[in-house]
Length: 147
Image (cartoon, rainbow, N blue to C red):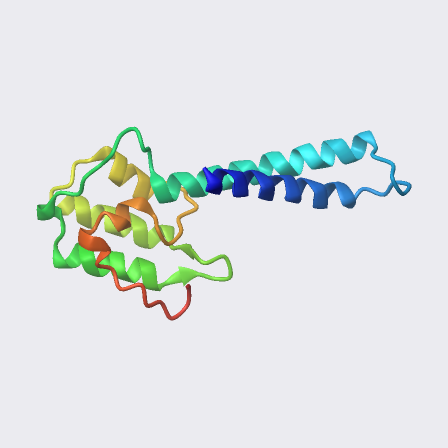
């Protein structure tokens, strides 16, 4: 619950910063400031929701990765996805994740949630739930670029 509170407070702070960009007399909270605040807070909450979905997936439908899908190709592609992030955002490369989805499919994975997520638009970040399904999170989190 603490993470939800932090996320809510971050969205509120972003809204306040946006509202401060609207010129007004000191102490005056205009309708323009309210619109700017609401818009910025809404955008921030949507961005945070996307990140939560990328990291946690759907907690009401847990997914397991079959051991037979964890080929050396799958593991090495997952490792490469972790190591090669798109800078400056630090997001995972969607093309690498799509190739990983293809490799999982070639290994026999027929789980639409996993495959669709990896092929989806993202944003994808370190902690992306399908990657973290690998046994014991065996991916070496030793990135040259993203930490």
